[in-house]
Amino acid sequence: ETHEVPSAAFGRSDKVNVYLPPGFEAGQALPVLTLLHGGGMDADQWFRTGHIERYADHLIAGGRIQPLVIVMPSNNGQRYDGAAGRFIADELPAWLKARYGLAPTRAQSAVAGMSLGGYGAVRLPLAAPQRWGYAYALAGWYPDDLIAEVRRAGRMPVELVLRCGTEDDLIAGNRALRAALLEQGQPPDYREDPGAHTFHYWSQVTAEMLQGVDAYFRR
Image (cartoon, rainbow, N blue to C red; front, side, top):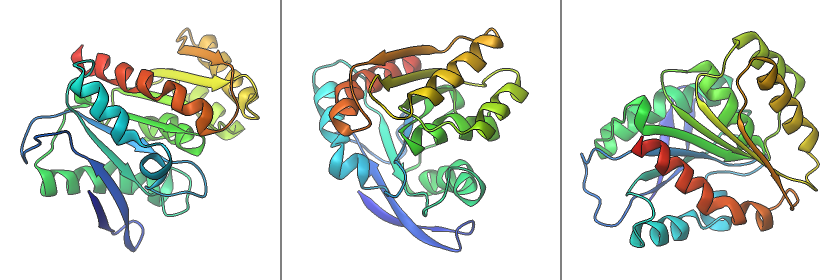
């Protein structure tokens, strides 16, 4: 489903796509994955380009993951902090509860994304540690200020998975984030695979991402 969700933080409404598993009924106690798009894109990227609904339908039908809700917000052209952070961490959960009756606990909430969305998957839990318990970042953009923030935090407040292609222009930042976490004694689940900064690579790990999220929810 596609909605225009009003936001006081943005001062306007913005597009949000919501994947609902087959047979969904409002008020079901289902886990929620917040899935973030890349820079210069919007809520349609994981839907129109990534076809996340096909992966979810296939994995649920095969019994490889349990039913879940996937919410894909837009960031209004901003980094995933400031107004975009407030919209996703505060306003969006309230809207999901009002619209669908969804009120997942931290243990039933995950955040994931690619590129700038990978930045958001790391940055948002630092700002709102009570919101998500698990984060999965694909080829994230990790500027020096985020690396410094991770170091100041002492520990990441979520279980963190990092994946990046070996031909990705952002691989240096991914290695720097991993090094910062290792310095703190908190090694992330980190892996480099053949691939570049495109959906040709990300699509190869999409099913793995959903299964990792599901494994966390089951725990």
